[in-house]
Length: 174
Image 1 (cartoon, one colour):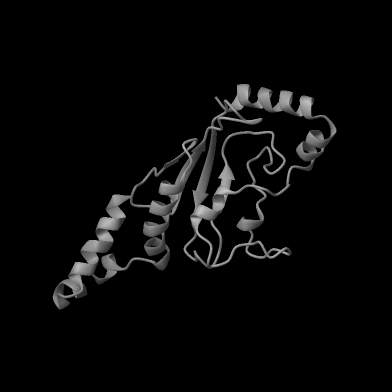
Image 2: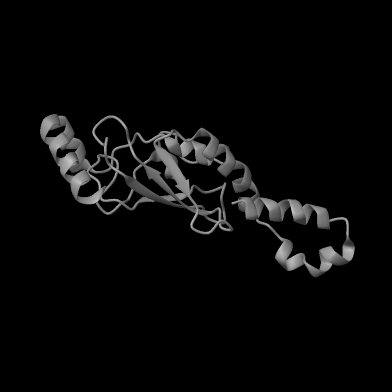
């Protein structure tokens, strides 16, 4: 992470030297996405609750990261859930792609990891979809139904829903 930020600062220093800028032109170009991510990742990390940790497998690729969530209350307390985030080149005009890597019984997440969050849609009927004014920090809010079976289960029998969540945590989220 610091590597990309350092590169941006170093490249700004090269702008004054015409020969250095010309020889490093192809390696010097940093995408708009990456420039935005330097700032947004720092903001995201500063605002993460203590139950969340962000991990960059490659610190030079701020556009690919994992988020680990370990809830300390509610149905999912005691579980450890991994999310993978990929920020496309067209960011911030299009939303990041987020997938849950941990199998979970949740109304907003399918068992294969797809996440229903209106914020992750480019176009949303309710007007809450992605907009260029949004940032990664906005992804910390999850309220949108997708797994209908889990949602109906929760409405029908909260105790049995909790038991199934506990079973999934024991089997997949430790």
